[in-house]
Amino acid sequence: MFLARALSLTALVIFSCAHLIRSDELNNYDGSHFDFVVLGGGTAGLVVASRLSEDPSITVAVIEAGTFEKNNPNVTNTTINGLGKNTRVDWQYRTAPQIYAANETIIYSAGKGVGGSSLINGMTYMRPASSQMNLWPSLGLEINWDILFNYSKKGENFSPPGPKLTPLGADYVPSDHGYSGPLTTCISPHITSTDIHNTFNTTFKTLGIGPRYEFNGGDLLGFGIQMCTQNERLDIREDAAQAYYYPFMDRKNLVMIVNATATRIEWADDSQGSEVVASAARIVDQQGKTSTLFADREIILSMGAMRSPGILEYSGVGNPSILSQHGIDVKVNLSAVGENLQDQTTMAITGLVVGENTTGFLPFVSHASLQDLFGANTTAVYEAARAKLPEYAATIAAQNGGSSSAIIQEQLLRTQLELLFASNTPTSEIVPAAISNFIGAVFWPLQPFSRGSVHINGTDETAQPYIDPRFFQIDFDGQVSVATAKWARNFLITEPVASLVNQSTISPSFEAIPEDASDDLWLDWVKTKSNFQPNYHHLGTCAMLPRASGGVVDNDFRVYGTRNVRVVDLSVLPLQVAGHSMAMLYGVAEWASEKIKASL
Ligand SMILES: Cc1cc2nc3c(=O)[nH]c(=O)nc-3n(C[C@H](O)[C@H](O)[C@H](O)COP(=O)(O)OP(=O)(O)OC[C@H]3O[C@@H](n4cnc5c(N)ncnc54)[C@H](O)[C@@H]3O)c2cc1C
Ligand SMILES: *[C@@H]1O[C@H](CO)[C@@H](O)[C@H](O)[C@H]1NC(C)=O
Ligand SMILES: *[C@@H]1O[C@H](CO)[C@@H](O)[C@H](O)[C@H]1NC(C)=O
Ligand SMILES: *[C@@H]1O[C@H](CO)[C@@H](O)[C@H](O)[C@H]1NC(C)=O
Ligand SMILES: *[C@@H]1O[C@H](CO)[C@@H](O)[C@H](O)[C@H]1NC(C)=O
Ligand SMILES: *[C@@H]1O[C@H](CO)[C@@H](O)[C@H](O)[C@H]1NC(C)=O
Ligand SMILES: *[C@@H]1O[C@H](CO)[C@@H](O)[C@H](O)[C@H]1NC(C)=O
Ligand SMILES: *[C@@H]1O[C@H](CO)[C@@H](O)[C@H](O)[C@H]1NC(C)=O
Ligand SMILES: *[C@@H]1O[C@H](CO)[C@@H](O)[C@H](O)[C@H]1NC(C)=O
Ligand SMILES: *[C@@H]1O[C@H](CO)[C@@H](O)[C@H](O)[C@H]1NC(C)=O
Ligand SMILES: *[C@@H]1O[C@H](CO)[C@@H](O)[C@H](O)[C@H]1NC(C)=O
Ligand SMILES: *[C@@H]1O[C@H](CO)[C@@H](O)[C@H](O)[C@H]1NC(C)=O
Figure (cartoon, rainbow, N blue to C red):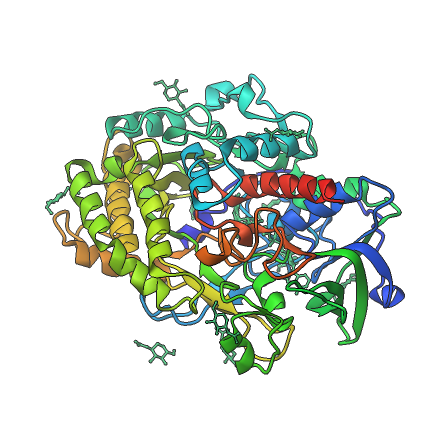
């Protein structure tokens, strides 16, 4: 299908060399003590493990359900992104039927292996909008754009594009990048040698979207080129393991245990006062044998937004009514665990090329504002949505297990809506794409208002969770999707792009959805299962917020009601933002690591 292929553009030559990677056997560590036990060796978990183990006096164990994927060509290949999807490096979670769309279940990709989702993702490296991060302090968060920007640059080692790439559309702002961190980033060297970027550029300009020379400095509106997590010299994917684990794996104080599933936290009997104290983690190997690893200082949960909530629930931290359904004793009454799931939905308008097939990678991207999408109707759309905020908030509060009130939810939604109305915050990302004989525009609204949840689904601690994103529950999400879809189809019939597209092959066709079609007809198209997929930026399920606002962790990433359990992964981000999640997450994990070290 075009959508899947368009999301996986690119061309290369690599050779994999057999490499000796030390694998620590779970059996040998049963009953061992470490200062820190990090559960999940993914994108954020490896940052924390790497930074903590810089101090040779601190011992760190990482538990990862998958294995080493250093020589897996589906991971390393830089010419086609996401070859690892639907293979062993993908958990391939499945959602509950999406009753606000076509009532179908959806496969939810998430990376499995040392490196986590950075093993299978699209490699796009793009920070959020500064306007979004700067509103978070008003919600009670310490983090803001300056902190994120600073720590994200700390992790980055940008390799500027050479002169050969400049005529192909490459550009960047030097001060918006870091140059001495472990994570290598660049502009894809596999960029198409055609001049299609000029065609896109002119068309975007015609439709009111001007040029943007850099997307990593906090402003994203406009059309330009994006960066990626790739090692240009070796021509391989720069996943979290390449950046934060393999270079440091010989450290004596860092132990990596793979093929091991974390199931539960054990609490010290002498937990006193109002906070419970974690003492150990329970781990199951592939044969089903359980081991116990003691954490003398802390347990860090880094299993991603779909899994970190579940281990809290199996350990007795969560909504009492959910825990009791599964016979679990309540340790901490914290109903926000697993609530507030947010992701975007990705769609595409496509056609066949006229003339020659397109070759090479197209790392071009644009962001449209509410004004770009709704034109003269913008104020009316904004006012109508604003009037419905109490209704939206009530819907969310009625289904979140009492973890936050409608008043709080309304404040969060209002924050999102005001930002969209403010002119410099993007509403939708629109990616012009061309691969073999297809051409089109892939797009997703960036700020979903719908809120889903993820909870345990039975007593088997190794089972997949019950995931319900509730896509399109809040009608504003459908409205923005429709407006973006219309904009994207209009893009394909606007010159000079129009000349590259066989107009009679555009899908959805003008017969199926005429130019003057009702929004309802478009909405049916949007919600059809094969027309949208998750954007895999799922977050928010262990939100960093005040406890009364639906928070699971405080500003130090510590789970409320516990003394020594922190969550460091994408689940702590409380609201969706523009950009792509990984660039933000590397910065957040660097910041968390520094906080943890400072607390020792
Ligand atoms: C298909 C796809 C495409 C994407 N494209 C992009 C992109 O182009 N740009 C971008 O910025 N972002 C992209 N993302 C999103 C980004 O990759 C993620 O948001 C980010 O990597 C999440 O990091 P994390 O540390 O929260 O979790 P992960 O990196 O997913 O790490 C979680 C780790 O925990 C392990 N784990 C889970 N449960 C257990 C358990 N019980 N015991 C032990 N280990 C466990 C997992 O195997 C995994 O290794 C994409 C994601 C996907 C899936
Ligand atoms: C990357 O994958 C593509 C598509 O499967 C393939 O054509 C190419 O040869 C691969 N590159 C390497 C180095 O394996
Ligand atoms: C790589 O992907 C292909 C196609 O999905 C699959 O057949 C193959 O088993 C994968 N390789 C590995 C090492 O997982
Ligand atoms: C929950 O578990 C039941 C029983 O195993 C299964 O039938 C169902 O598909 C699961 N639901 C989800 C959303 O995973
Ligand atoms: C949605 O699907 C589920 C199971 O597939 C079914 O039980 C339910 O009745 C369906 N709901 C609607 C509204 O069609
Ligand atoms: C920026 O990051 C550095 C570490 O790279 C840190 O020492 C400094 O305190 C940070 N400054 C701010 C304002 O966060
Ligand atoms: C788009 O056009 C502007 C000139 O208006 C130019 O400066 C910019 O580099 C172009 N961008 C791309 C990606 O071609
Ligand atoms: C992990 O399990 C896989 C599949 O069973 C196996 O191929 C691999 O060798 C194991 N890895 C290690 C390091 O034990
Ligand atoms: C959990 O806390 C909520 C309020 O936050 C309270 O209403 C509820 O009674 C508590 N449940 C239990 C089992 O303690
Ligand atoms: C604005 O609304 C009117 C009336 O609903 C509609 O005809 C028009 O297409 C809308 N314009 C845009 C840019 O959405
Ligand atoms: C263009 O791409 C299509 C689909 O991959 C393929 O069937 C066709 O042979 C290609 N045409 C040329 C000239 O390469
Ligand atoms: C456009 O597509 C139609 C339908 O597939 C085909 O009949 C026609 O030849 C194509 N036109 C061009 C210029 O490729």
